[in-house]
Length: 262
Image (tube, rainbow, N blue to C red):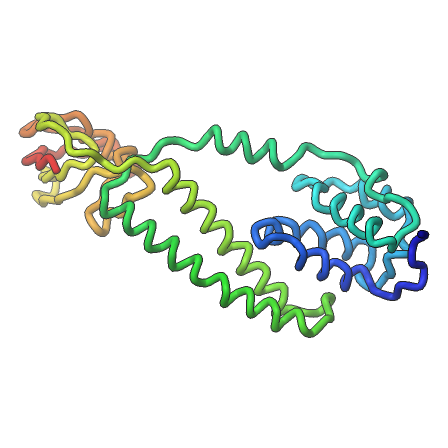
């Protein structure tokens, strides 16, 4: 059976069907690339009017994010018998995003969190996942317009969805790599998880901090990163020591008044 040369659906309409058939996680990754492709080709063009010269011309563009989903879309319209030839064979192959993902996973580092910090990140993740149905409804309502060229609400909703999924992936990665602090034996030196009382000699003021991983740091709440200038200076020190802190605004001395091992 040959291709359907009388099919009047535009690339924009077909792309909507293609994306809806994808799992939600893949849909987020694919939509920006697919709409970039069909905008370049022409949103209102019929699939049967697209030929290999269009695909080759698009393929010559420099798109760092790759063409994996574009090739999948071209295979989709071929399988639906909307084009005469398998146009995906004319697009330039790029490095698979899967390889990039694998590399990034290898670079993930172990993170040590307090129990409270871990629970806060879990709560934030649950809240973000709860936003998914709301944004999906916004996209469905905006997509009902069918005018993909001037649909600002749809673009805004998709951008918000992309940002949301990025945050969710970031938190899932953090919690996957996180280790919760274990109870440790009393040690006279400052360690991660300890509460320290510091006396800044230059201004004669005292500050209390919990020593935490960078991802959990929040100085306003008394959570001091072990990789900050002050954190680096304090880690491994003993009660009563005078510490010289090398900060961007200049060096200053402080005394470690107390250490509480939690």
